Length: 236
Length: 317
Image (cartoon, rainbow over all chains, first blue to last red):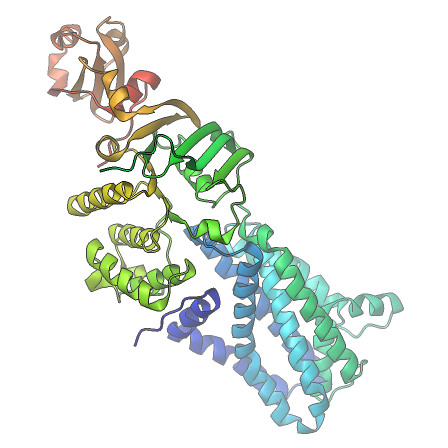
């Protein structure tokens, strides 16, 4: 039976579900990377790698798709839909982030199975993962307006992403007070901390602090997505 | 009987509209009105600004300066306004990994149709467009003509008050073109305003009430089709098929020649009222073996464009 989609989020889901090969790859890839990290690697390295993986899944997916749509003329067609630019972008990016969350859910389940005693970190981990995925999608969407080439868009995504991950303490533990303050202003640090906690490592923050940080960035990401609707959907 | 639109307010109005791009391209200082039931043609060669203008009027691009209003409202982002527009842009863009029916369903529902209404109208439009058998095929496997037909289905399904169509007959077979003309004439009779961007002189003459000629982004002439054709009454167009390039200066210097231009291997010459085509051949005396074919016919809107700009409209098919 044909799946019919009448809304923007339904359409994203139908297209995702219909692309079988892509679906399998998208679900299997994080799991293949996650199994050795969760079961074998030391918690700090596992948390670092998984933070990067989640950030990259969030940014690259949206950036590449939106660039392709710009090239094919679909962006122009979206502009003629009877939907405000803010709502259009929120609907698209939240669906894309949900699909990304579905991709990384098996890894999160693996973490829970491997370290069941760390359940206090699970809500924070889920919230921080969601906020990083949504912010990543937003970053990818903004990057897609800078170029018509998917390769260039990847570059525009990585240029800010790598320093931000460093400043979040993902690559090396931060000791300088200034850098510590900066890291608290970045969403990746909360995801890294929640992963460290859930993987039985030694995080600097408490679960509720991480939960609060993740929640704040999720609300901020949703607000920014609405605000950037015109910038992303109406730029040529 | 066609709805009389003379006293009705414009459904679509643009004043001093400019949309410019880097490099100097775009459309400049366009003023136009479109009334209910009217069919307006935008004609001009490639790069004249037809698609740019249509994108602005379709709310897909914002004007750089100037004012546009749809149904009296200047806010192009208003969902209730966009629901009354049916748009077919120059690119036949679709979700390629979805079927034709899934694509059309998505757009039908986006434009506010209920499931029942969408199903009924899509069944009718897929049958009308000849896409019924291909409705469950992925759009990525469609030919260009099929994609353009699907665009038409999507533009028509919600029965918009204004139809904005960019080259609607491009890549359509003759049967589909006739069906489209018939449908547009019917829609116009029931009050739908239609704006067509086209190079197809025959399409424009057949269904447009009025045309605007665009050249280098500017409106150089506007008028009712019969009035414009009257300007050419009595004159003739001579088409010479040539084997090798010929100098046009000699032809253009003839008092009988109003305009001359080359399009591929065809030389288009617009002769003044009462002029004899033999005068053209006289100029080519001695080089007659250059000409492999000669045709004299009644001039059309394309000839008027040639007369005004010295540039020929591309052949539509």
